[in-house]
Image 1 (cartoon, rainbow, N blue to C red):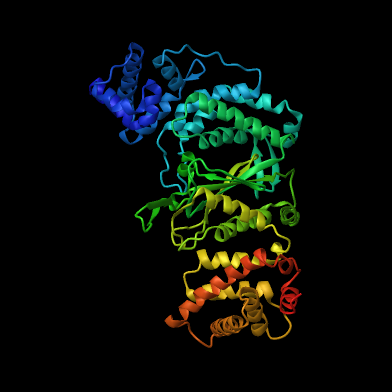
Image 2: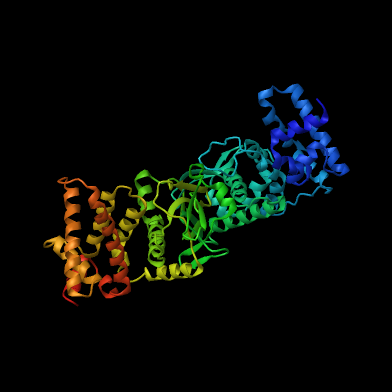
Amino acid sequence: MTQTEALAQFHSAIGVRAFAYVLAHPEEKIPDLLSGSSPISPAQVEVAGRLAAIQAQINSEIPEDQREWAARAYLYQLSGGKPLARLLHDHAAGRAEHQRPSSTAAEVIREIALDIYGSFLFPSELPDLPFRGPAFSGVATQAYYKHPDRRQLATLVMEDQKIAKIFYQPGDDFLGPSGQFISNAGLAGIIQLDTLLHSIFERAWGELPAGATPEDFSLAAADCFEKTRAVLIGEAKTVLTRIHFTGVLLPDDCVMELAEGRVRPTRPSEYQRAPQSLAGQLQASSESGEVTTIEYSGDIAFEVPFDYKFKIGAVAQEKLQQWWEQNLPGERIEQTVTRLRFALLMAVKREHRVQIIGSWQVTDDPLSGSSMSWSDTKNAGITPTRLTQSEVDSWGRWYERLKSPGIDKVQLALRRVLRAMSERRDPADVLIDSVIAWENLFGTKDGEPTFRITMCLATLLRDDPEERVQLRTELGKIYNLRSKIVHGSADLKPADVPQCDASLEIAIDAIKALIDQRPDILALPDGAQRSTNLLLGA
C-alpha cells in the first residue's frame, strides 16, 4: 500500500472533520490534499507521513473490522501527557506545545477541552440514536476519562466546601465522590463528580456552532463549568428550559423579549441536536408564488428560565412525589407556552390559521446534564408561514394581554382550542373540544346549559337583536350535534363538517371578544357568574 493510499484509508476511518483538524488544513481542501494538488507545509507533510505510517501499522496488526476504531483510538493515546491528536495538530499548525496551567478548575477544564477537542469530530458511532447530536463517540468519552489531569480537576472542584457537601459519599476509585439528589428539572438519582464534569464537556460541545475552533470549545467548556458551579453553590438561581416550535419563521435577526422568556430563531447547532424522528421539511406557496419552508423540528426557540431547586441526600419514595409536586415548574411553563401559542392565534390574521406546535424541549439540569422530550409534528395541521415584523410585534402585545385578570380561569378553553387546531384530525373531535371551550367560558352546573351557553355566545358576538337570534339558533344546532355524537345517538355526516369548523371559530372569537370588549366579564371567577352578568347586562 502506498503512502497516499494509507493516508486516504486513515481519512476514511476518522472522518474529514477530524482529519482536517489533525493536519491543521481547511476541511474543504482535504480532497485536494489527498489527490496531491493542494500545497502543504513541511510540518504538514511530516504529520501526513505519520498518519500513513500509523495506518500501515494498524493494517498489519488489527483485524479489518476493527481498524476504524483503532485509527480513532490511536490518536488519543498519550505521549508525554498529551493526546497524540493534539500533538500532531499543534505540529502541523506550527504551534509550540502549551504548558498546562493548574491553578484553578476552570483553567484545567480549558486545557482538557483543547486536548480532547478532536475526539468530538469523529463521525457518530451510533448514527441511529433518536437525536442527531452531538455525535456519540466512545473515543471522546475515553479521551476524557484517560486524561492525566482528570484527577487534579476533581481535587480542585472539591476544594469548594459547598460542592463537597453535594458529593458527600467517597464513591469509587475511578469515578470519585458521589451523592444522591433530586431536582425540580424532574430528575433524581446518584451522581458522580466525574460524571458531572464529563457532562460539562458534552454540553459545551452541543451548544457550539458548526466550525467551532478548539479555542471556542475551550472557552465554552470553562463557561459551562462556571455556570454549573454558580448554580450548585447558590450564586445563581435559574436554569433554562428551551422549547422549539414549528409552524412559522421569524424575520431575519428577530428576537421577541417577553417577561417570562425570549423567542428567537433556532440556531444551526440546535437543528443538529433535534430528534432524528423530526427530520424533514414542509413547504407552502403564497398566491404571489413565494415559497415558505419550515423544519418539522422547529424554526423558533422559546427560552424560559426557571428557579432551579435540588435536594441532596436520599429521599423516601413517598416523599419524592410530594417534593416534585411542590417544586416542579412544569405547570407554570405549560401556562406560559399556552399563552404564547394562543397569542399568535389572536395576533395574526391570514387566510389560514397561523399557529405553532411544540416539537422538542431541552431542560438544563446542572447536576445531570440535559433532559430531552419531543412530539411528532409531521401530522399536525400547520401551514408554513413567514411572519412580518409587525405581526411579531402584535404577537408580543397579545402575549401581554393574555395576562388579563381571569384568563387563568379559562385556561381549559385556551388549551382545548389549541388542541382542536393542532392535534385533532377527526372533525368530531374538533367539535367536542370546541364546545368544551364554550362550556368553560359560560357553563354552569345549574339550569339548562344549551340555551344559557349559546345565548351568552350570541350576546357577546352580535349586537343586532335579529342577528343574535339567528346565531343562537345556529349555535343550538351545533350544541345538539355535539350532544348526539358524545352520547352515541348519531354519527357525524359529511354535511356536518362545516358545523365542526364553525364551532372552533366561535370559540376563538368568543375568547378574543372577552379580552377585547368585556374584560370585566372575563375577570369573574367562573362560568356561572360570567354568563349571569353577561345576560343581565351587568
